[in-house]
Length: 240
Image (cartoon, rainbow, N blue to C red; front, side, top):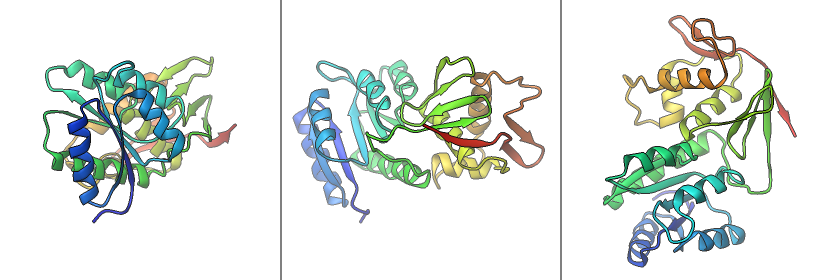
């Protein structure tokens, strides 16, 4: 059985909500349900949750809009449910701050595995769902907003981060001036099931460097250590 985490299932299909709630409760989770965005916000005002399962296609505000608005207030993990025929929506969901996605139709046990994986990553990285504690970190001339989960450039421009980019940057900010190899970064971002031959870390770091305005041939913030990995070479401090 899993530790007792509270999950919020947001889906306009009553039968799906009920089936998922029953299934997840048999695996040790406490569940809340909502049929639309209004119900989601009402639940979040009443109770803290550890993860949200959010359907993309909802009446009123859709899942993308809800995820974007949620990210302006909270770091609670989100798994987005999407239509298999709409890959662009899945990409947009991750860009809006979703931590993972699952195309419909799906097996409940696959959703359970995704939930466990996302919660492991969230808890390992110290993320939380407190809606009332905005927090920022300053590194070099840059700032990351840990609630809105975006970058603020030296000239005060807001730069969006995908869910995976945010998690990766947060790991570096937690361990500045420490060399982290690819295996460590994979385990911290993707959990114990990560493929050791996965090169996605290199791609994500390349994208982070682009957003930080880094020269790919001579980066100054996230440097490559030959035969070692990567290191954040600037100091980090909190900013209110």
